[in-house]
Image 1 (tube, rainbow, N blue to C red):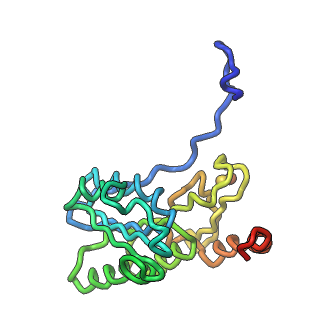
Image 2 (image 1 turned 135 degrees about the vertical axis):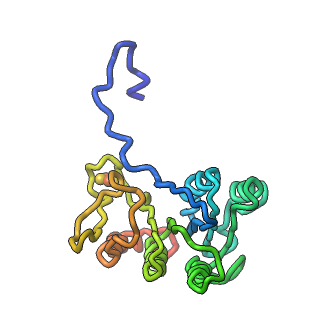
Amino acid sequence: MKINQMEVGDVISGIAGPLGLPSQLHPYENGETVVFTAGGVGLPPVYPIMREHLRRGNHVTLISGFRTRDLMFWAEPDQRIGLLQAEFPELLDVIYTTNDGSFGIDGFVTGPLEEMLKNMKAGTGRTVGEVVTIGPPLMMRAVSDLTKPYGVKTVASLNSIMVDATGMCGACMVPVTIDGKMVRKHACIDGPELDAHLIDWDKFLPRFLQFRKQEDENKSRHGFG
Ligand code: FES
């Protein structure tokens, strides 16, 4: 509204942003696959990164997890993932998981990922070039813990913890360990994508319980307790 009220000749004295770093996209020319593990609404932020890899000719495996079939979206042939499969039939593999087994593989996204990693190690499956994980923090941690012993580069996108995205509120601080030292990174300046193996998940995860009391109170007030 303020911008619309401006007259010709008025000036904006400064703009903070956009901050953050773009996704790092590497070419994988030896058939390696870039695995995306998307948990629930982690799928939309995964989508443009995945599409860009495909456009560059990289093979992509999407492991898309939902709690149950009713919460799934974009899976029909005329919807985003279906259309992407039609556009890149040779390059895109899609695996669905549901926690209750109502669609696709029964369980979490880590199930098929673990199988891929084991097959890679046994020399019977595609090499996993890197893993990008976006979704609930516990899922991202589980993915990170899984890939670490295999030495597979893993990126966690922490867009969901940002509040003002200007580097000022401090809400998006992430503890990471670099050269044995703990430092804090801003998801909105240094991220949103960070090396998942550097994140100190033990220190990072408790923040998500910070407002549990208020959340529980609100739930019961609205009849969901
Ligand atoms: S979101 Fe506020 S400092 Fe990053």
